[in-house]
Image (cartoon, rainbow, N blue to C red; front, side, top):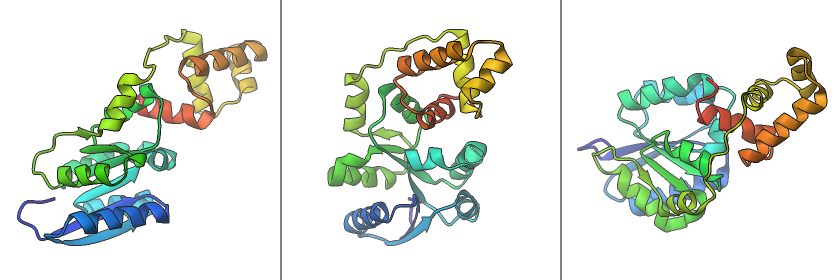
Length: 218
């Protein structure tokens, strides 16, 4: 929130009406000293335009929605640049994530990172944070505990396992990879299975999120 303003412009980048209603409720309840304008945005193009035009003070989004957005990977740097240039405070909401992936989400250094399950107390703290002039990243207590208490051991993958995961994330099938690398299909399938198990990933969509967030794909 910009110092001295009586008007707070909030963008909610998430296509889920209940979530939008929750955000609206908490903002209107906790912030009573200024007028609140809430923009509900569903496309990356619209979001980037709103940021560039200075129509956003605070951005709320949710990690799964953001990472599943097809244009996020190619626009992540631009989005962050526009937020910095326009002094936009970013709030990331997350569902339960594996501790290793959660650590990388936090490393994205949004001004506030909050679990969707934390309710009123969590939102109240986030609202306090976004009203402060300092940009000191805030991570909720629940997410911090999840990282500390979770099994966060790193399981090193072999070069061939990394190679298979990278190609899968690029859209190649197991048979495609086997042909490209002159390996048996069963060998590639085993390498993928072992790598996914070590990283505690259960689907290709989780794998793609992991690769993007960990910086292994641009």
